[in-house]
Length: 180
Image (cartoon, helix red, strand yellow):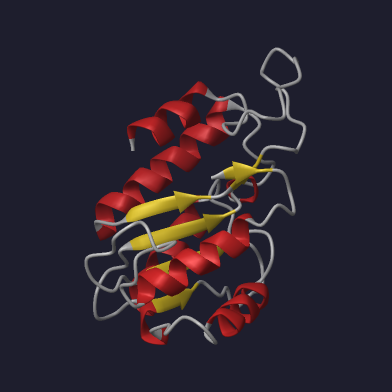
């Protein structure tokens, strides 16, 4: 999902997590066959903001808290998926945080912060995509990618990429999201 900063993407993710955790139809329209184990990776802000939103939503949604996991790095540093050590740490953290069963869906929020330097070139995008595919294969899960459209980025030739491009000008990312 992509939109300009501050439009409510993270709030929508919190709502999806809340409803999916207890098996309610998401947005009262998308069926959820069973309660889902949701794993959230905050790449921009800490877990506190998501927790506040979920607490508020719990007043109207019967959240199953045991079905929600949030990545918390003890170093308080955002993982950099460009770094193989951080990739291993994140996968290991998911296994430790979900010891009884694999997550059904993993949320990245936002993806442009997942790789140090952003998704500004195909090399960085390729590394991000390879990690995402590895994560999906290892856990047999779906992934949800939140991204900004408003952050100005540039193609390899230096041309500005239109702000409404949710794929940061990357054909790799566009094909990955479409194909996955």
